[in-house]
Amino acid sequence: ALSGKKIGFGKVIQMIDDMVANLKQEQLDDAVKKEYCEKQLDMAEDKKKELEITLSDSETAIEELEGDIATVTEEIAALKKGIKALDKSVAEATEQRKEENAEYKELKQSDSAAKEILLFAKNRLNKFYAPKLYKAPPKVEEEPAFVQIARHTQHRDAPPPPPETFGPYTKKSEGAMGVTQMIDLLVKDLDKELTEAEVMEEDAQKEYEGLMAESATKRVDDVKSMSDKEASKAAMEEALQNAQDTKASTGKELMSTVKYIKNLHAE
Image 1 (tube, one colour):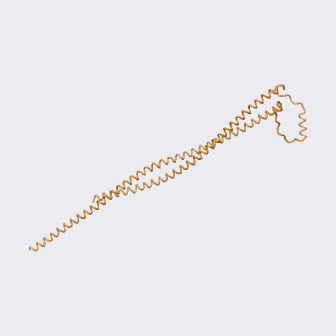
Image 2 (tube, rainbow, N blue to C red):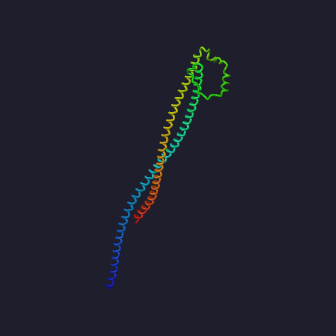
Image 3 (cartoon, rainbow, N blue to C red):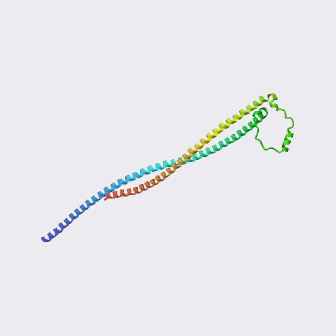
């Protein structure tokens, strides 16, 4: 009977030893698991902080890029508007220059014709009242003899009396002088007007040419500036898309990391 009891106690002791061993193993496993979880948790927390920084940087970049794109878009619109206004002003200036030139040519033609008529009239007066100042017209080819005879026959009669407007022949020099002086004044006025018109025409043409040169240079500069800004805008829009993609992917990864940390805490 004693022998049987010894055998029974031996089994109990063995069972107790096995239980103690299992508890120790479980404690060891728990310690290992705890160490693993703590290590994973530290790594996850570090990753979470990095992702939060990346996400914040992406949001800042997106905000800045959106502002820069809005600014450059306004600048491009302003350049387009300026180029359009410049083209309009050039067209208007060209039309005005054409009108001014046409007016100058018309004035020159009319004044020249008036001057020619006045000088012709003065020369005719000189023929009668100041023969020494008279300038004969250029010689033309001789007419046929019968024409000359006919003209001679027509002028065989005595010359007509002088015009009443010049008074008696005794005062012809005085009257002619007054008329020729008036003609000289008119011619002088015409010459002055033509000179002034010519100077104004030259000045207007120079000013127009200067304006065209400046406008052409400005247009080239504005077109280049607009092209550069459009290229810059395209690059910023591409960068914005990349930043938005980065934000989206980082946000998803951050959510997964937060969920993972929560599971680690639960274990």
